[in-house]
Image (cartoon, rainbow, N blue to C red):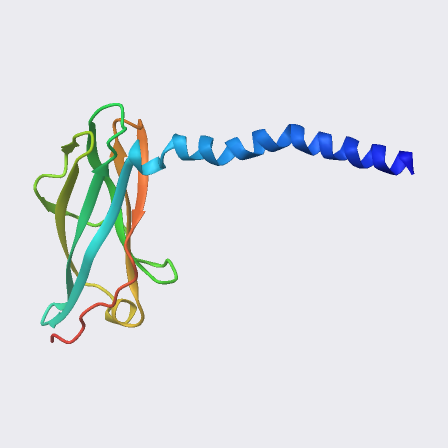
Length: 167
């Protein structure tokens, strides 16, 4: 009987040695902060595409906004420039490989520490495959160059449906 009591007490003592370290893990994780508080967060919102049938064929116009937010714990501001953006089907098939974008404001922009910038982008394309654009959902996919990170940040929109009602 003494052996049973001794092993129970010994096992309890071992568990008690690791319990304080276990309790510190949540505190240490909370102190780290979120990734967004120190890095650039990039998002695409308000994606829209319209398709028009004309005498010269089917053309497409579209727009979207890129939202850039730099966390308050970042080491400084960042300079952001656009990478390549494309229009894809839900399955990832390219509709337009490299969108020829116009922007407002110009898309070479500084984002201050703790700040947010929004850039509105638009594009047009002649001679597109109406069936490819108008059947199913679309997504805008791209990247931005982030000087603070020293690399690119990928970004994609939520799925959306093109307006194919115009003729």
